[in-house]
Image (tube, rainbow, N blue to C red; front, side):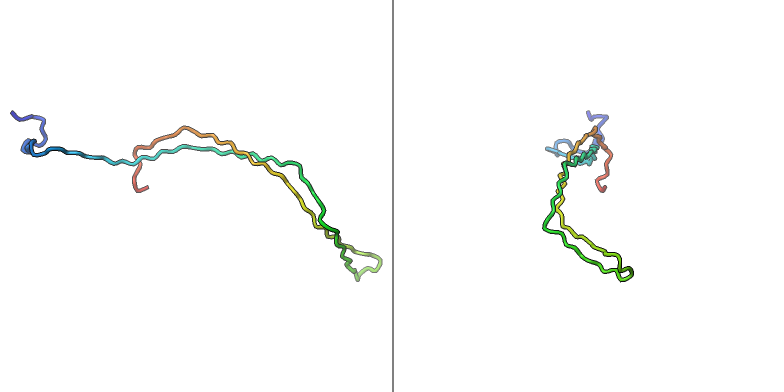
Length: 101
């Protein structure tokens, strides 16, 4: 007696030894991450490098004024410390993801 629920009643069951099928599906998993920087500036250090250069700018308009320009090379050391805090949120899965995205 044949099975009334058999979708393929004419297909002989003894001809198919093994039938394996695989399904491939893509999903998207998202995880939010918030990164918050914290910057600390330490003690600033300044050091003169060499002697200053003095430039005399002759002002032809007023002979009673001496206009000088001082140029000094300096080294400025600014220590900066960077810290970061990361908060990881709850992951979320999208099972209807399209493989072409």
